[in-house]
Length: 119
Image (cartoon, rainbow, N blue to C red):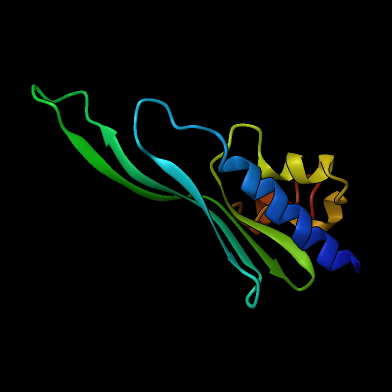
């Protein structure tokens, strides 16, 4: 398995682990969306959650992206990270060097101040 393919496997494994975390007090579920042809990997949140500020029982639709990772130019671009620990930290723990990870959700100017790749 070449390095890039190994990184893809690690990203898919880590994102799949995030779907196993239950969402409290609702029927919201986490689902993965893996587009291996375009190297795009997502964890989506889907379902309904209670609305507590109403005098009657009500729910609202939840449909949002928790994590979005792309492979661009041979590097891992984190486009969205709604986790507490941070996907970048999990990728580093899995053995991916920081210079192979780009915090795409930050501006290029702010990325220069991190230990991760700028682009």
